[in-house]
Image 1 (cartoon, one colour):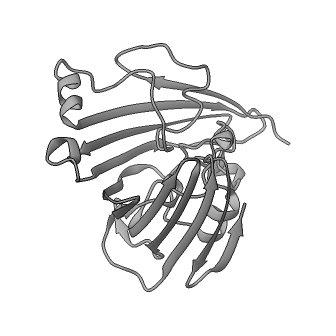
Image 2 (spheres, rainbow, N blue to C red; image 1 turned 90 degrees about the vertical axis):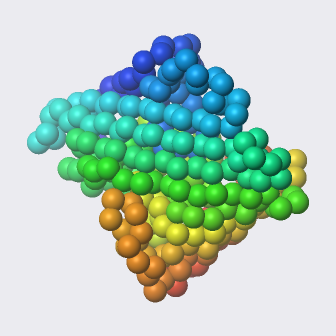
Length: 253
């Protein structure tokens, strides 16, 4: 196995204390919280109280692999995320809106190794893309989400799997390799629903199974569909299954 070294630097304008592994996962992963904020301004707390949350995170990586043709590889990911708590802003029975973008540059040893996981969770073709754009609405004990969605933000995700090397935001390579998408850095139109009671989480979703887009913005609805279902206990133990109209079926635990 070739030796691989990595240095990950997260650039923020407002430093703050953080756990040692805080930046060892991608800003695109669910629940990611940077130690500081790129977008920091006087009215930030006031806007957050009203229901607006604007986040900006930049992560820069340097990889050293002496035995590869590209001995040193650099890359970076800049994410901008807007979360609007419509329930707080307008009416308590309304839901939430989220829009996020991903801008990537450079590369990683994955370009030469062709590994399934990717040497880093930030690895993606260079470019500026819309990643997610959805609205979710609580209806009793169920929450329904619709818009441009990404599977890896809701399904097949477990906190213990989000280490830096071999990272896929927690989602397993079995799923990402066989189904292909919608995954970071591109989502597709879809609808999902979840029911949460204590530590029990039940989820189901249907997505456009064909990724037709320009810079992450859908240009067409393809002929294929992807359907998923999952049952999870305490977010880390669960079983699930998927059906892709072109690529077949799969199960995971």
